[in-house]
Length: 405
Image (cartoon, rainbow, N blue to C red; front, side, top):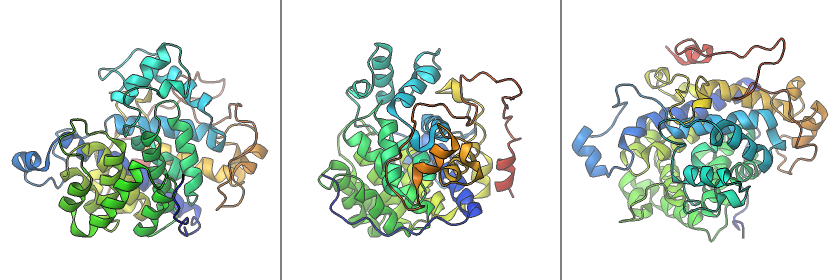
């Protein structure tokens, strides 16, 4: 059953400019955390200390996001198109068109959960059967769940619902719960909730007796004692795989809580705990970035993040997380009934306006979920007459310049 805890009060989303800054903070924070944590992935804290001392910044020569950032862009672009009308069919179709039916990149589609999903899809299995593989409990949904919280700012339950729709193709059980916790936490942070309410929002959308909830509670109990205590309370000692969703999500929220939401401290705490460090730091970065906005991200860290290289998902090459953040805020305003209603959602503007209701509504939308709206140009789209498909050149994305000193 769902958590017995009452949904914590979440402040209503702020003005459009403030939401945009938080959206950019969330997704750029995700990419920064991913790039900072990538070199420490699968390492123990002792191994990190032996190699770098304490990681306090980028240690790679060319820092860049990994599959975590590219899959978050993937989910963000899909959500920007269909909005609250997103269905498992939309997600499954996108997996086929953008990933499974294309020539693969060097990493062959990312981690274990993604590999299992791709193999099932290529065998003709549809969601939710496509998610029945050995790693359905991984943090592969959690790493791409922040866009759902950005879109559903101030509506944690709706963010969790959208994450479950996205995850139905690739994850099950604890893998879904981990993604829902991240989406709900980001949604609460997007509305200006304090860190304690952000964590409570995450706990409120997952079953109270789930492994994810138990790990989150242990992490919160230990957070005031710092990163070593959080790691000791959460990590499954001796288990060889570091991508367990309950563990990774709890480490990320624990880092965020231990830092009281501070961006730099939260991300570096996650990085230096090791394990699945790119994902834990990405999630912590998304939470802290949504809490404080893009200005909280150190300028040097932000400037290093360029458009996705397509190393994992070639179809995503050229898209920037800030582009996706802006598309999602436009789409969210459309759902709320502003003149942008036709952008990034499925169906007609009236359908989009009816999808969300009041700003704090968490009801599942009605309307035509199968229509293909006029939203952003997506991987695999052909340019329609009179419509150009922009190419983002590293260093030239206007949104990146805005966060540079």
